[in-house]
Length: 68
Image (cartoon, rainbow, N blue to C red):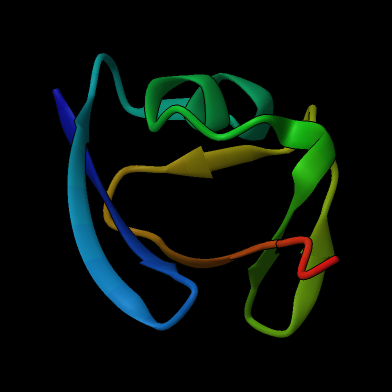
């Protein structure tokens, strides 16, 4: 088991993952966010869906919202 530190639209959250790493697209599924509606950033770098996040890492997720 591992832990990932998330900041989602400014709110911090810690989640547990199976194993020592998880792909971004699987992480989005785990936290109920459609990957097409969000971007993930680690250390100022934009992450792709198939990038992996390791135990203990911190990422920011920005979710797009419509105000139409």
